[in-house]
Amino acid sequence: MKGNRTYKDTLFRHIFNNEPSALELYNALAGTNYTDVSLIKINTLKDMLFKTIENDLSFEVDNKLLILIEHQSTISENMAARFLLYIAVIYFKKFGERLYQEAVVKLPRPEFIVLYNGEASFPDEKLYRLYDVLEEVDKKDDNNIIPLDLTLRVININKGYNPKLMRKSKKLKGYSIFVAKVREYAKTRPLEEAIKLAVDYCLKRGILVDYLKENAQGVIKMIKLEYTLKDAIKSARKEGKKEGKREGLDYVLELMAQGLNNEEIKKKIKEAKRISTK
Image 1 (tube, rainbow, N blue to C red):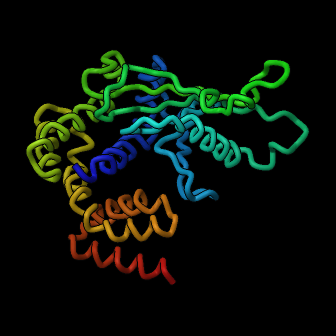
Image 2: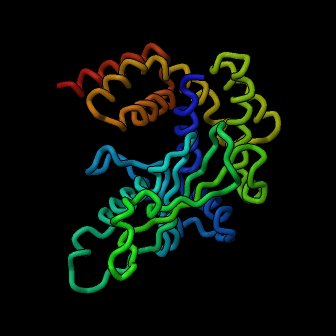
Image 3: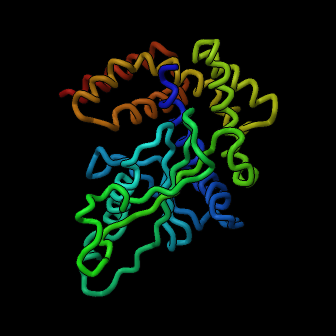
């Protein structure tokens, strides 16, 4: 089922990269009941100084807590190391030269979370530590102090897992159901048809209704146009632009929102590629 991982990543980011959805997700993960959306400040990394470093979702809660969330379909032992890069860039972006001043700078406490919905077997939740991938000789100094560590939670959001969490976030539960239905239908049908059926299934049952009513055609076209973008994505990867795939799909969604048809979108993509190579 080619394109599976891409559509899930893009869908996840489009659903949750806004203050109301991030607040709902945070309340579910933390067991809180915040209602003031103004407490949330989105600071997801995108097109930063280090162009290969971008994450799926990060936000501050009341200027005291930094939540970094990644959506993953596969589990990597390097996830903790990647989160170390994310938090370093976010702190640099937020505080910059203030970190070099004499007066102490209070850093918002970070929490690191991976939401997993791959097909491989995985428990409801598991902790991963940066400590586990450090070279043995470097783990502790002579005073038995660990010089560097980071812990992240990996939470299984596949259908049937973590029911308490799902009850607290309708959007996360809806996302989980949608992905499960696509996966089910795609076993016997082409991916594009599987997504259409999953959209119909959710709309008929009141799942992700607000999002899908506005974006159903975009979600379906996103998969179809992913293949149109195949050559552009390959080119971007060859040039070392990891963000090419994500930005390309986001760009397509923006064009679709403008009401352009497939041929017009292809022309826009061709023009963007021509400009980028100048």
